[in-house]
Image (tube, rainbow, N blue to C red; front, top):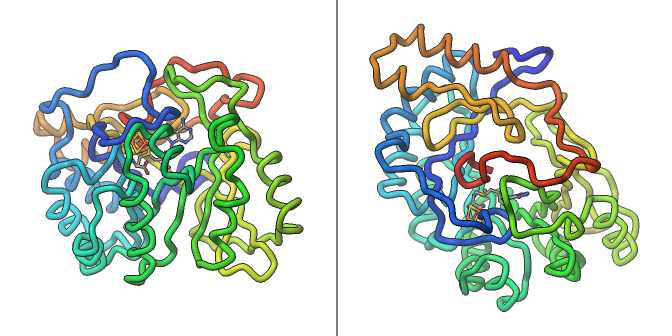
Length: 327
Ligand code: SAM
Ligand code: SF4
């Protein structure tokens, strides 16, 4: 599928807006409503939309949320998703707290080779403060068990916030010295109403400076065709990679190959733009496959060339929060 001069081959599927964590930077600070159960796309519906999107050129999918593993019967869904032949690459973003060794083995049996986890601190007390849950050890175990079982790469997403975890940039980075992990520092994006203030946002330049003053000059790593938006580097002699995802300081919109399917069954061409195209209701009202494919294509015509969220305009945008869209 083509949007402007971008080829769209990557579908990010949010299977739920529910989450067992309460990360300060993700969950809105004021009360918010969960999507009613009947409005959440059923697995069967997600599979159908995915198959049609694959007929239009999608080859890569990521399952996200909310927390994907809180949704009931997620494993049988994943097994069916992995059976879609034209999907060559399926990965999952998770907080890792609900994954056991047995469950990771199951994912590997389905054919999932890559997992991304969120980990913003190596300090269990701080972990509980950031996520609202005392689950550091489970998450840490999941990360190392995934590595041990052969998941490769294991990617770790960290959002750095001033006064919260900006003193841990070096410690988190140091994991790459010993392990082949990909640590990705994601710039905090102001979404909906979050408890995080603008002054707490730490941009890539500052993170990179801290890393380089501790470990020496970061060496750029050549990008592969299928790489995501992270700009990748390595510390001299390290086994792992340090990546920076820079939606604020240097947007990567011109390379964006993604389309999102939200948990309420809308297509969202851009994470940071509120335009969404309903596909679930036409599907529930018996639209034909061709009609549904036309909806997918028309959503893509609305993919903006630039998300508009810049370093200068980081006031809280009146946009949906991350758990309902799928980060
Ligand atoms: N629950 C899963 C997890 O935490 O990995 C998947 C969903 S979560 C929304 C996906 C990613 O979005 C996480 O890596 C999280 O750190 C990131 N994220 C959430 N809110 C964010 C924000 N406001 N700015 C930047 N990244 C954010
Ligand atoms: Fe849940 Fe992930 Fe958001 Fe944290 S970042 S609240 S784990 S969805």
